[in-house]
Structure formats: C-alpha cells, structure tokens
Image 1 (cartoon, one colour):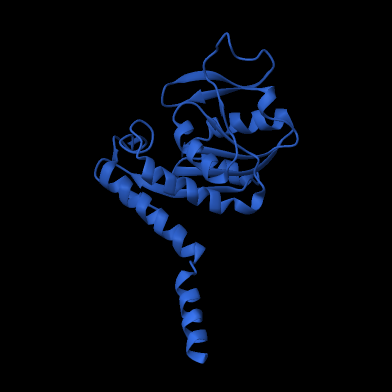
Image 2 (cartoon, helix red, strand yellow):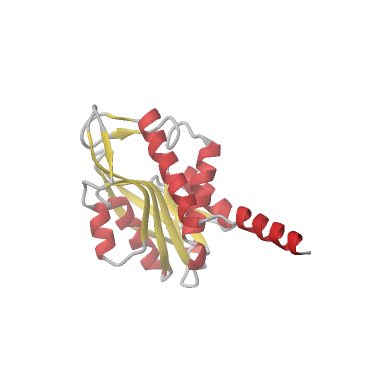
Length: 215
C-alpha cells in the first residue's frame, strides 16, 4: 500500500505543470520564431507575416491563443475585441480557447453595418491613414468584461481607439493582450500608465536589419 501511495504521488508531481514555466516556453518559442521567420526592414518596421498576420500558422497561433486564455483566465472575460484585419486571426484563437465570442472593429464602411455603432478614429503610422473604426452596439454593452487582443503594439493608437469604443459601450476592460510589443516606442508605456492590465508576450527593445534584441 505504501508503494502504491508513493507511485501515485510521483505521478501527480509529473502531471503538474508550472504555469510560469509554460509561459516562458511559449515566449521563448515566439522569440525563436521571430528570429527564424521574421526580419526587420528598419529600426521601426518588422515583418512576421509568414506566421502571424498574412500567412497564419494555425498550430502555433493556437498555442499563443491558449497562453492568453491562461493569462486572463481569472478575469471572467465575456468578449474578445480586436481590430481588422491582422488582429482577427489571433483574436479568434484566443476567443476559441476561452469559449467566448470574438468582436472585431471594422475599418471600412459597409451598407450592411448597423446604423447604431460605437466609433473612434485610429491613425495608422504604417499606412499614414486615419480610419473610423466601428463596432455595432448590439455586440458590446455594460454587462461585458472585454479582453482586447492585437498582434502588435507600437504607438498605441489602435489600442486607444479600441479602449474608446469599450468605454462608449460602458463595458469593463478586463485586460489587453499583445503578441509583439515594440518596447522602444511609447504605446506600451502610455497604456500601462493608464492602469490597464497589459500583457505582451514578446517585447522588442531594439531592432535593425542586422539584429533583433528582446527585453
């Protein structure tokens, strides 16, 4: 009987997983993937479109989605919110792992979009264009606890627009999850100073065509 108890204890210890080490594994995998498949065009622009936001690696994105689900599992999130187009893929994987709906803010006007919407202006530094993003009032309300998800955080303009939309709805921002943050730009600092629960999986401190340095 004693031997059986020892074996059971051993098996339980093997099955237990340290959440922190699991997160570290995902972060390391992401950084390795950025180095392997991504490349910096300049000191400000990095391309990771081979797996994140043009061509999608669904197995890897599922792991990323699962990690965000674990990071915010105690926040009682009811909706995932992102912005089209590059945020939709990762947002969908997060929403799937949390078993909740995904809502994405639309950048383009459409005749089939509801007349009653929450809207905000978002300036894109990459495209040098200002968008009017919109979310139907039917899909966000004061009862929601919202997790904002996006692939990148640089200057923070997209996040500011999404935060504005959530505030208009009266919903609560339970957290913000970012796959890659450009730590050398001001967006992350500004969002954190406002008190939001922002978690970025990989933070780049500096980059050039020769190297990518993570925090």
